[in-house]
Length: 451
Image 1 (cartoon, rainbow, N blue to C red):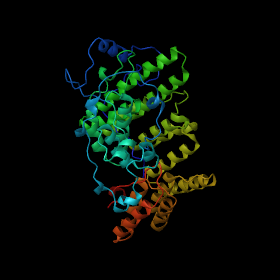
Image 2: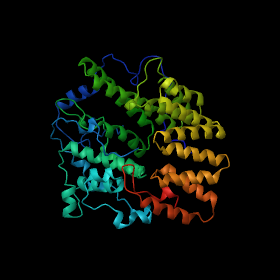
Image 3: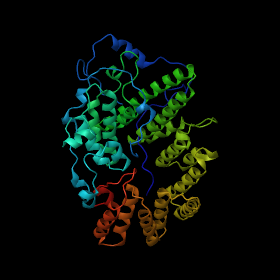
């Protein structure tokens, strides 16, 4: 099945009727950051590794474009973050997990290629390696040193930007377990050590803090910490919403509201990941719009679609349909969820008609959607049209689409069609390697081709 693999989540007690940290509310609340900063400013600057041991609590597409949170001017500080630059933190990336066609030197980027260019061309493995070379001051040559200059231990903005690049790229190349282990070096991202002693602002970019939540939960083997950490971030988001409202900074308020509702979806995903389906269903029910205008992340209905996919994962197709009704997920979003719901109910013939209609409508507008094509092929397979399903997937590859889902489904189709599927898989890897690099990711792993 080619359903999008939704986040997973954790257990919680039945939610009371009072407003919680994931509810958007204009009521001012006390800032935990300000309190921590005031206590911290009276003490010496120290690494989280010194003094009392910290409770290690909490904290996919290319990380190339940096959001305002990553690129905004950070408070001036002279804290020493050298404990994050130790070479033993980082793992070596073996090339053996990469198919031979992608290891061809003529197709690999030059060592001196800047990290932004690597990300732009989808060379995520090379970008992860380059980030470590800059963090640990271990370039392999003078030209590499010029392209990825060593980082200053007090330059927190560049350190955290490189760490985010490293961890995000590891996730993009299917090396999440390594990213989880490396994220443990950050320890407690809610520690006062990571706050500016004067302004109380957090020095770690929001994106890295959110990514660190799930990675540290995996790394420390404690999935419950993800839920607790998301709620800590939600409490900060509510404080920032109230602060922006008082200052009449509407754009900042909307940005923090979007972050808050996205955290609500992530909590639902974390609960599913813990196999607490009942808790996830109850939590998702609290995210209903109650007749109010829904928050749309990026203005494209992503929140409504995320909630619908979570409900589908829980097996409640009617709840999924409700999430995108009345234009909440856009016209296309409602059609997509209806087709997915039919597939979840085993109504593949009905879903096939919907996917075919949606595909034709999109192509009339010059849009070639890979997700629609893959689901169309799955429905063709389940309705006894394996040859047509294979042709659809082959056509997507010829058109330049190379996602893990597409390649995995196509190689599965090869296994169903013939006993000599290994040769077909190798030829497919060669075809994909010959494609022009792009921001969606060029280099693939053996797992993508089931080799």
